[in-house]
Length: 150
Ligand code: SF4
Ligand code: SF4
Figure: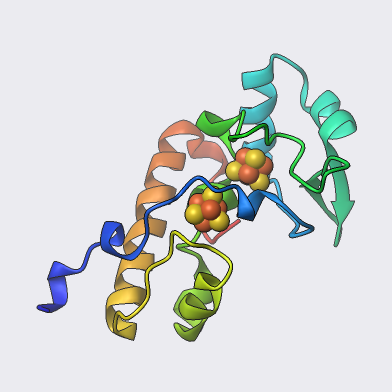
């Protein structure tokens, strides 16, 4: 397959199974996430943190319900338009650029990830998606972009 013919859409298509929204994974929120989600819910950032977040590693993460699902999961993501950056990015994350072998490892937990692609195509697609994500975010919150992931 020619180098440039592999697209991010070839590598991944979400099955909306909700597996990534279950279990303690630490869905971190950055400042823009807090502002976006709070605005979407019509509450203050402080209220969002109090009602829906906990702290892990010195950062805010979303709470889980008693069934182990994210507090915002209800058969689908109820904050989809403003879901946290790390949810938007998945599975195109910096850890795959650091080690493309992570792609196949992640596929074991995410049925939307397709395997069998070469490392160069995977890394190129991940970079492309992260750039796209940063670009869309900078349009929303140009004052808050610091680069990097999550
Ligand atoms: S585990 Fe993968 S396929 Fe399932 S909802 Fe999450 S991203 Fe989509
Ligand atoms: S915010 Fe949405 S996509 Fe992210 S873990 Fe929670 S339910 Fe899943």
